[in-house]
Image: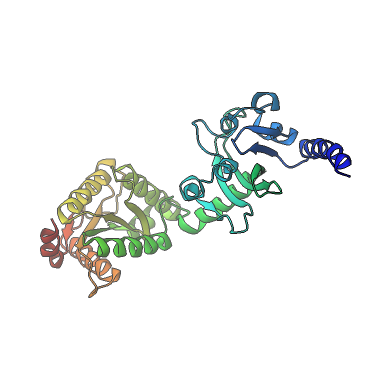
Length: 332
């Protein structure tokens, strides 16, 4: 029986290899030293990399990335599960039973010349004595699904007319930055801007012209040199908002003046304005160091008060909420 079993095992392994080679699911197998044992035909089609180029090597990463990094199978083979969170934004954790791991990731796919979003499963194979002998990795192209998901997310967070963040995104960002500033005991600033005499603009140029005006204003806002962590949003109607994390009053006022001047410099004609011959905006600025005695709405209310003051003191100007001056200077 032992001799018969020994004869049968090589045949079993050959059958298993051939089975994986012909699977319609892109699959590759690495040994415990991360050398490629199997690179099936579906994997060749997905990656553009022939099996002859990678079998027996540790170069399989080159099929997915432009720089060396671990594939999911390598993580299991090398026992580096602690690095999963760094490598894959979405992933499961290996179980205590030694079962596989699932992850998702954008891959640059250098050989095929396009970026794909892959769903990845990696499962370990153990010998009878419990020693790891190989890891099987299977791949699914989820790019179309992911792009559709991102498009839906964008519809939910971006203002359809202007392309800047919508009110929902503004509210979410304000709350998250408020909590961050409270933890760090740092300042958070808010700019509120309103297009001057927008109703007369609509009356003169029609609603389509009004839409074009709002697009031009939002484009001007986006052209300003905001940092990556700042957020520009359409707050409602002809009103826009800019959230400036970790920014005191002086810095926020400087940004606000740059925004106001930029709109005026664009010189979009406005024959119905009582301020200038072009479109202008009124701007309110507020800054707070959040504490437990106030809420994000307090910052919005202060910025609104400053905006009201700007509109009622001549428009086309920047006003600062007086109550925020001491807080920002103390934080400075």
